[in-house]
Image (cartoon, rainbow, N blue to C red; front, side, top):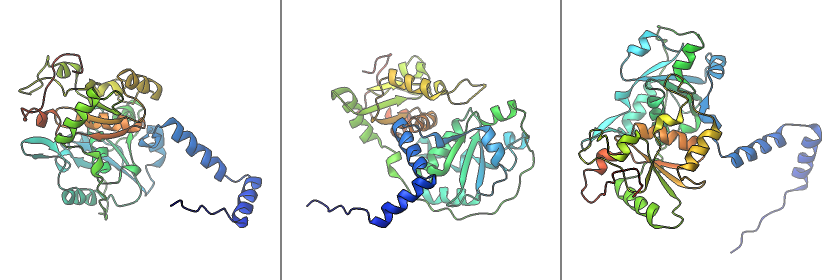
Length: 322
């Protein structure tokens, strides 16, 4: 049955005409949304150091400093930032490290950080943005990434620009954080097996697998701690550090450069992108970048550490996808 589409009322048409003649901003916002949709880039996923410096005192902005321990935070952090330990967002499950903890545990973690259901969350941390990307992925899993962003260039760029740092941990209140779990951001091993086959066996597969580890891990020349070195069949190699200007300046490369790199690797607009690495950490940055560029993306959190445990899973050595 075809749904009946009602025509706009005369009042609505008149209101639109009045707004247009008055030069109000609604038509401009619509054009901006169309431009964003056409470009595909989710530019709201990163903020500049300049933007953050201007919004540090905003009550609806929370800044997270993520690290393995407090040393880097205590040595000097962005004023007002709140410390988050990797131990609070990672766990080991079935022998596989760096897995997502239980939703209830993550909820308590973010509530203790004073992160509620509204406001902006800006993330930076150690390892050239790698840990920050993992926090973003965690928030995406919990349904809150729409208001989260990475600080482009991280504290490295902040310090290079000689902006203020603090050694004082400011106090803050806890908040109520409501998880809205998005299971689509995680893909399990059995599904990866199917997608791997699809990427190699279907003329227009509509799926791309990204191995975010260094090239030597992908080829198997460096086992990287795995008993069965190599990569998942069908995967392409895009080391996560290739997304950045450099380790000294861990800002994202220009969008045009990133799009070219991903296109040359074989990714097509509209593809489902599956990222993985060894334990899900490097894959988090690949996940962030693919989403930033507008791809529909999911992550195999178990990654190669889990993949190689099943003899039914093929592991490819060398530079070829298969």
